[in-house]
Length: 203
Ligand code: GRF
Image 1 (cartoon, rainbow, N blue to C red):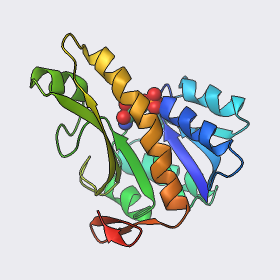
Image 2 (image 1 turned 180 degrees about the vertical axis):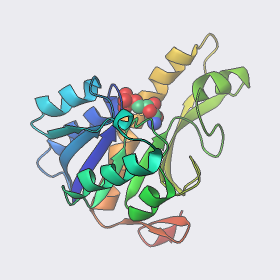
Image 3 (image 1 turned 120 degrees about the horizontal axis):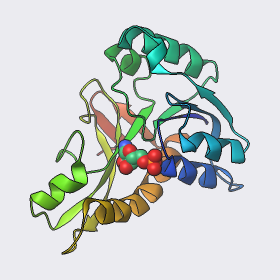
Image 4 (image 1 turned 45 degrees about the vertical axis):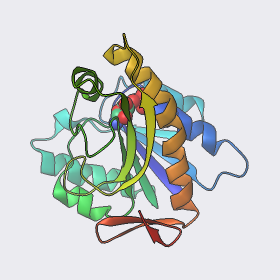
């Protein structure tokens, strides 16, 4: 299973994929890492792992449509079976999402459907939630609204800041995201209409 990872930043989730893919029995291979930001540290992580990198800056394009169109050409050159959004901080056009329908995954740092959008950790703290977490989901045209695949739940502890909570969530992100990719690569996970299906059961 050929995987392309899209990033904008630090790439700790990317690192989890690179580490998993380095295991001899891993069901997928990271073919390329593409960033819309030249300074993204994730590019260094990819280079250290011997994975191809490419930068496509959204600033060089007049609008979202033309950027996404160019991004499709860059991504498709690697003939991916699966596209992983790992801290890719651009909202994708419906055309992009449709092009990769059923093979485009994202991880969102909340227990979706709670806290779509930004600042999820602070929002969970402000709401007084006792639990928080992260969700891997198929990407559809609805932002942070695609069918969920797997969630990790962590406790919110008294005295937590957005940063301390984010760190606790990220440890779990790095487990569930490569896990979902493995399910996909093994042919166990697919999107059926608007639901995720694992081992023949709708999630
Ligand atoms: C993660 O918190 C993820 O949930 C969100 O973006 C962040 C990416 O972090 N989608 P990193 O670049 O993988 O460290």
